[in-house]
Length: 351
Image (cartoon, rainbow, N blue to C red):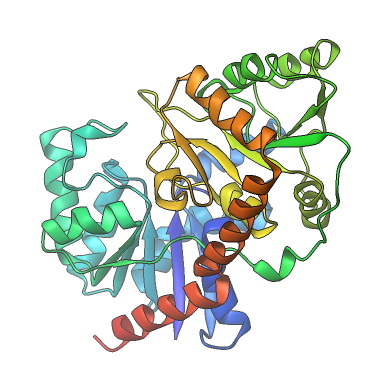
């Protein structure tokens, strides 16, 4: 069995279950091809992203590869883009195609951050009706089943073997944020919430980078805040999780973006951290309110503060939620998710 993944981003984080199957020799080959060659080229020239020349070159010739291949095609194009025209043509050629995306609003396309016109809806409905199956999130699965599409719930996975560090007791309670430092992640609101806590009791840790990096750095002068920068080394980031006590995610939906999943939530739970998160569509699939963390309304600083304070003030509750989270995250282990994925791929291979 051979697979080609055709997606908008060259970040293979969300495709690691495919590579796991390849390493286990369940799949003979996995190729990853990007849909945005000009963007990758400009990003490399401007030193914005360090894409490899091989990835960039392959993205330019991707249409020819897809046209000629007999491999299973996994299409990861964001919904309602005109880029779907080429994959739609491929369906006419009887290619074996799976659509793979976290988009949750197929049954109500105007509900989300994308507002498709009638032509885009027609193209996409035609494409989705012709693929072998669709892989989506839990919310997306419900939507697709309503529309009578062949769909499966196969979420993103986590390699739990990487998260084996032993947690250490802290003099201060450490509250951790890992992710992009941008407005829609609720960074400024988080800092406002953090200012209400006793600096002798709590320390706040930020990991990541973005447009608000300098803003976060400036707050180190007035808050018990430590900024660790962007950490790409997996062992180092695991160590940061292990040294923390609580994880926070304060994302909120905008006209152009929404938190569709949240792998950092799984990583935090893997090391026994209880979560305080807003109720974006992604975290709502991962956080069971009152069990492995608290879900609070978006842009509600007071509710977020109360939930965080409850965890800071109650070590037994932190421990209880942390234990539940460690058991819960096993559902997202790369072994279990890859097994589900392999069953779907095998079914597609035989069609």
